[in-house]
Image (cartoon, rainbow, N blue to C red; front, side, top):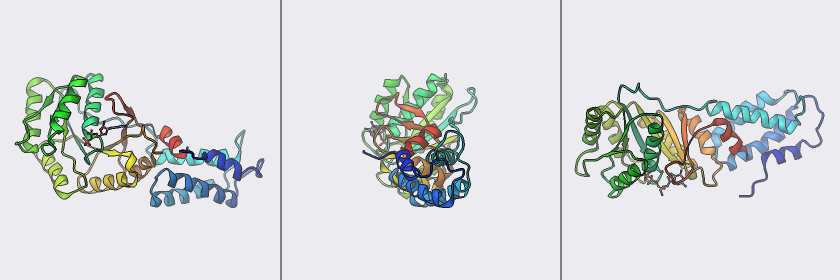
Length: 297
Ligand code: GDP
């Protein structure tokens, strides 16, 4: 995609203003119009953009243009700082219980978002940290789901607990935890069913699992390529089921990743990881500062 970078656009706007001591309201207005366009192009939702721009406006007017920065760079600096703040400032790790206990992580997401792949990716990360993960095949509806989890599990050397597709996901979850406690596993990751669209029965099933076993973390997997849909999915899951964190997949594609900003703003929950490819090692920690630069382009 051939975006003119925001920084170039702002340099143009401000080219006559070099040397000014402070940003005037008119300077800031002109610059923020470009920032607004950049954010919308990056797929940040309109509501979030509006709130963001008005909060920036207040901060930027009267701001001193100091040192070696041009007015354009000063605006970008402010915008970047505020974006980072909105996305949570720091990286967030998956919360785990002490290694002597079993941490149950429930994965949720729409079909195709990358849930099964991400389940194996996360398990591999936790294994590398010295944990002993077990994957549990709780998607009994999609014919190939169990097999896919087994194939992925094998690739990362992590066992998969399955009871076939005739048993309820709740019983499979219970069975997996029992198996874990008898066999020395200290993380159980439940790969639950995804549907093409959000539906009540899917969310009810997640709630039933959580009522039956002690889920420590509920993580939602969303596809960054779907932009606003990803934001809606995250908002609905958070309201109806309650989530603890989000994994944003397919950021190796050409999306600018504005969904990251909207998701954080809509749910208030941290983005833990980003999916950067189909390989099981393609999972990276989420860094708000890097995402801010990516969003601004
Ligand atoms: P699920 O239906 O949510 O379990 O989704 P899958 O795990 O089966 O993933 C759907 C497709 O997306 C598969 O072809 C994956 O290889 C692919 N996929 C998952 N995560 C990523 C990612 O971060 N980047 C890319 N490019 N593809 C991904």
